[in-house]
Length: 296
Ligand code: HEM
Ligand SMILES: *[C@@H]1O[C@H](CO)[C@@H](O)[C@H](O)[C@H]1NC(C)=O
Ligand SMILES: *[C@@H]1O[C@H](CO)[C@@H](O)[C@H](O)[C@H]1NC(C)=O
Ligand SMILES: *[C@@H]1O[C@H](CO)[C@@H](O)[C@H](O)[C@H]1NC(C)=O
Image 1 (tube, rainbow, N blue to C red):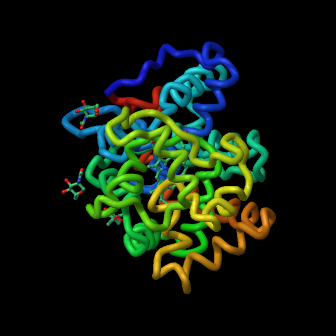
Image 2: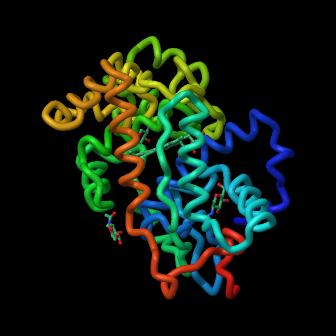
């Protein structure tokens, strides 16, 4: 897979730029959960080291690489060798939230970019069909909290898009039962069934938050309260039998207070952005181009 580094930010237009920014917060998440926040996700395959972009959670799913590459090219023109690709993802994540009406925060900088990537670890990223126990274990493994950080960061699904293929199982054949997911609100199920027919195009896009698709607000959580989470991994934060004493009370708290959500979200984003940064110059570098190590 290759990204077109010839795209310029100015060619994207406002809508394209916003879409790519929303995608960038997910890139930051997928970067930080694999080897830490080190830009490993952005590397193309080289020297037999397979790109994380080709891992199942990213292939055909992670978007926005061209904007990161374009931002990098502009930065290298203005100020060569200063801003790492890992830092660009952290900055883009913050901007996407703030421009969409969410909270702002000071982004800690100084991460270096890795010399390596790990497709194998990327295969292990949290997935939309993971059970609550698995999601919690993956967040713990990433040195995050398995309740507050998990719920707050899942609030990133208050904006952005999602493909039909991630909901058709819940609509038509949940866990092989040939029945819909019983935790899915019937009206929302009817709406999604129109948009995502049983044998339709699995790549069609939907809003993760149909109430305010482009706003960063607490509606992700108010949706969960009425069984209108899009992904299984969203709804189980509220509805899984194991959620009662763990994640569900936090969903309730955030549904009731946007301030509480924003405050936890900022704390959790900073925590996620601090996962295993490379600061030793013998272990990392500021890449010239995000898809390649400098020696390549
Ligand atoms: C808790 C585990 C998580 C799972 C299982 C998960 C899963 C997914 C999936 C399956 C998609 C749709 C991708 C596609 O349609 O190709 C998605 C989109 C998205 N996710 Fe997550 N996610 C999780 C956590 C997060 C976190 C922590 C953030 C950010 C803080 C985040 C932000 C986003 C955004 C903004 C999108 C939309 C991207 C776009 O419009 O291109 N997600 N996620
Ligand atoms: C990535 O997805 C494309 C399109 O679905 C597929 O053709 C390709 O084989 C996938 N690549 C890998 C490495 O799995
Ligand atoms: C847990 O983290 C380690 C190191 O960060 C990683 O290599 C491993 O794949 C992770 N395991 C799971 C199940 O996510
Ligand atoms: C429903 O899912 C089960 C298990 O994944 C599968 O064996 C079965 O073929 C599916 N049914 C239909 C009609 O697709």
